[in-house]
Image (cartoon, rainbow, N blue to C red; front, side):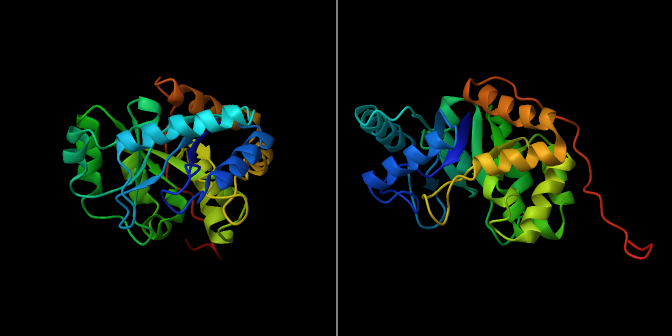
Length: 254
C-alpha cells in the first residue's frame, strides 16, 4: 500500500519533531500495511518554507536511517504547497517539488475559504505541465459551504485527496459526511493519511479502507489503491465522471 501524503520528515514542520518520532511513524506505517510513503512537508503556508532540494536531501537521509533500523518502508519526496500568487514563478525557479518527481503537484487551500484566484492559478499550473491535487478539500470551509465550487475545479482538471482520518470521523461528523459524499460523487481520487504523528494525527489507513469497502464496495477500494500506484509511477490515474453532491430532501423541500 502507498501513502501519498505524510509529515514524516523530522524537524521541519508540524509533523515528526525528532528522528525518533519519524522512526515511530515509520513503524506504525508498516503496521498499517504501508510499503511506500511520500513525505510532503508544508511549504509556503505562512509558517514553513521547505524547498525542493532540501526535501530531497532529507528524504535520502531518512531512508538511510530506516534501512539501518531494518524498517521496510521507502520514503519518497514530495511537498504540500499552500496556494499563493507566486507559485508559478517558484515552479520556474525550481523550488516546487511534485510528488516523487512526477507531474502531480499537491496544492493546499486555506482552511477557511477558497481564494478567488484558485481557478486561474490551477489552470496556470496545468499549462506548466503539472496536474494539481487539492489536498483535504473536505476540511475546507468554502467546500463545506458550497461543494459545487470543488466540482467546478475538478471538471477543469484538478484532482483531490481526502484524508483517511476524515473518513474515520476524527475531524468530526460533518467532515466525515462530506468525505463520504465526495467519494460518492466521484469528487476525490486519492485517500491518504496526512499523518503528523502516532497519537493525535495518526494514519488511520486500515480503518478508512474498511469503511470505504463497507460503504462503496471493493471496486471503490481498488480504485483508490490503484490510483496511488499510478501516481507514484507518473502514470495517468483513473478518473470517473464527477457529479453534484446529492442534497437530501427534508419534508419534500431541498
